Image 1 (cartoon, helix red, strand yellow):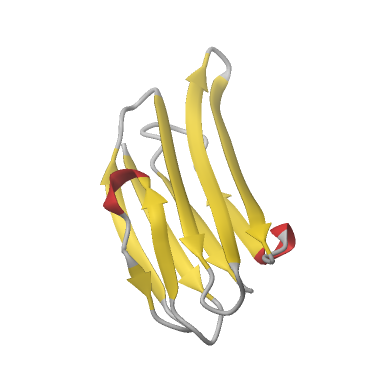
Image 2 (cartoon, helix red, strand yellow):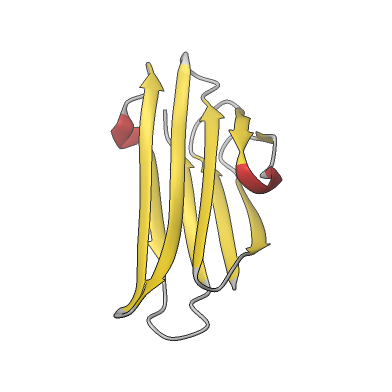
Length: 112
C-alpha cells in the first residue's frame, strides 16, 4: 500500500526534522509543504516524526497509521506539542478510503 505523507510548515521560519521513520525531509522552509510517498505493508502501517519549531523552543510529535481488522481498516493520527509548542498547533489529518488497497494520505502540520 502507498501512504502519501504531507509535512506542512505553517510558520515564518524553517522547521527541522529531529527524528522520523522512513527518512522524511530534514528541513522544511517557511510556508511550504513537502510530500513523500511511502510503500508500506497491506495489513498495518505507522509513520512518526518529530519536527522542531523554528519560532519557539519545542516542536511537534506526529504519528499516523492504520491496521486492518476483521471489520475493515482502522486509521489513527495524533499530533502532540512539546516545549513551548501547544498541541493544537500540531495538526494531523488522515484521509482514507474504505475499500482495498487502503492507500491513504496523511498531513502533519506545525503552526507555531
